Length: 204
Image 1: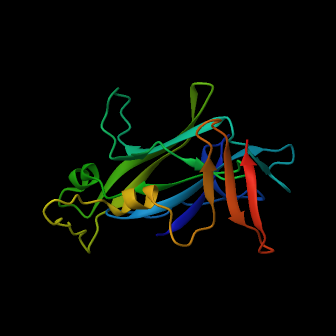
Image 2: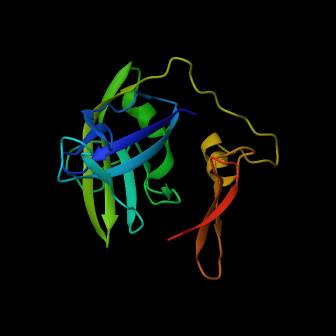
């Protein structure tokens, strides 16, 4: 699965190359049937913008995130073509990460028999119950050429999508995982550091 880092200048509402580089960046190509892994960094401008160290990474401990593809019509209840409203946070509260599905029925309907279709990609964060939109861009969705097949499950069994399995089960190899104490609600991030020592850091 392809992974992309999105650095969002929360003042201009544009993608940039990174915290130390304000050069504009592009959203990855969006193709029907794909699922892409996104890491979203929210950036605040520093007093030295746009020169050296133009951004600082916003701590996301008190934030939640939403991302979606849909129409831009201002109509309440408009159907979204796809969405991701459940994001995890890294151990240092520097970025949100989740998989963003492009294999929905709504995208297939939007495309129909056309090679491309347009929609709006939006990212917003919520703090203290109040949403702030930090990115909004009209994008092109490309129809897939190698059509996604369907799986027929044997009698008595239930099919599961690759996205659901990826979100539900711990992979054999991964860069870390989160432990949750169901009594206290506290979490810790377990990972292997660059010096190959095992770490278990509390998530605040």
